[in-house]
Length: 332
Image (tube, rainbow, N blue to C red; front, side):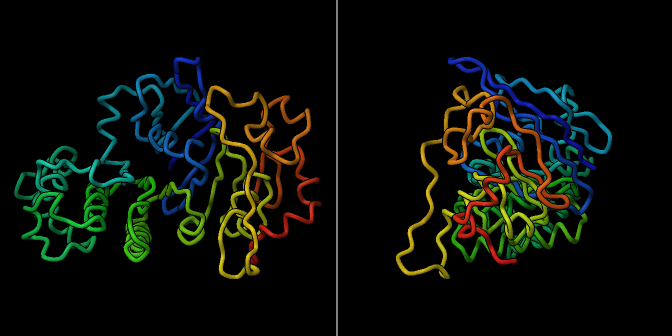
């Protein structure tokens, strides 16, 4: 259904070109769930915006994004607008910026139904109320005439989900959909997304920096750093035996209840480089304890760690032989 091949996104900056995403490839069938995880600035949200055709004007895209066989790279804006909200839906991180404060929520949920499905105002309102009820907005018929500021943060996120699902998209992208919510509301939103994906047979891309959210909600995960996928595979396999030094660093930095009292968290030395300053080879070279000169020679190719589990590292044998890595592995 979705096939991305060798996607590269280059941004023009005052300091020169910066590759925000480098050589990204993956595919999704209907009903598949994929998580993108990594630090801020690693390319997660830029990938999501590329799929939506919402990249900034200073972005140049190469590679291929095909949705049900249709090439999206280079597609005119009018054609992309016809796909957004129809075949591709997106739940944004902050609902107050995604919702228009001067329009009622009922009107905003109904808008894609009028634009993409040609429904009358009355028909679209009826469908919008049904969608609001489905995502858990109580007394939806009355509250459809309320404005975004009259809802709680969790309710506003439910409304953005209703908007994204209005036309029954083939692909739903959720970009950090629970970051600003407390843990109880977070669980409700994620449970709702899981139910709707199963119910409607959509593919889901969940963007998050929260490893716990990824572990519980997607079947497959891609770990990104410096615009590159450094590790990917089935979620259970990656969490049970992470292979790339960056993935190990992320897992080692997790606070846990089962660790030894006063056990220090693992930290990754150095800082995330600015995009124009990324090293020419492995983006993690220099911060990585296993760095050797060959790490700077070029972007490492994906190496098979286990069936359907790959990592971009030329020193996987040295990483695997290091006893220190055991602290970061999660029991299967």
